[in-house]
Length: 260
Ligand SMILES: Nc1ncnc2c1ncn2[C@@H]1O[C@H](COP(=O)(O)OP(=O)(O)O)[C@@H](O)[C@H]1O
Ligand SMILES: CC(=O)N[C@@H](CCC(=O)OP(=O)(O)O)C(=O)O
Image (cartoon, rainbow, N blue to C red; front, side, top):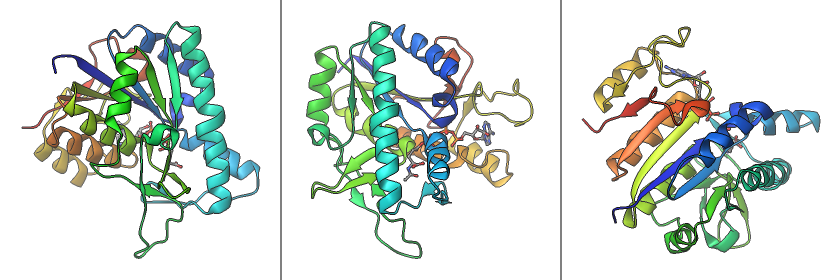
């Protein structure tokens, strides 16, 4: 139980910029010990959908995923993006293995029920979604799993699942075998108290302060679901949650979330 597992998540902003992605993966290769990478790619997927004549539709940070959209995001996330990242990690001496949730039944999701909004082929996760045994076996074999945002329902249906949620649920599930650190990596140095000032990194945030910053609109947009996931992981037993710059994961500047 003493091993520390580090789970890193990168999103579309980093993935879309080949030089930033390369620099991040070089830093990741320097991280010692067991590690997992979860990647999104929402920005590039939206561009690809538009190029193919399909208007992207995001509601509350989640993509409305009809059958045609699912085909395209599966090709983009589980195909091009995942395999490119794996190849770049192999180039850097990391034995990466690319996975969707269907591979090895590693993440099983439930199609989001239709309430006010029909999200289509979007998968929701819960505490039982992860096949932790297989993930632990891979980590013990010195393999670095690389997860994309595609899961399955066990009935042959692929589902599109938010990558921040995948990272958070993986982190929670793996607390059974490791002390887990969850690192959300993006293009800023951490959570900022002034979005226009890159120097204004808040070093630590507790849940009460988060609610205040959210209510004041200081923390907004994509940062809200990210921090909701992050605090949920912390409450569920993840040791440490960090919001940091993808190019500075081996440097001290970052936001660390605290339970209290
Ligand atoms: N207080 C804040 N500090 C930092 N980023 C913030 C803040 N409030 C909103 N954001 C925005 O949240 C974005 C990160 O969310 P998102 O775009 O969903 O990331 P990703 O695609 O990496 O998952 C940042 O690029 C930034 O524009
Ligand atoms: C259901 C849903 O919204 N899925 C996301 C999965 C990708 C993702 O999360 O990408 P980022 O981390 O780059 O935002 C989407 O298709 O945009």
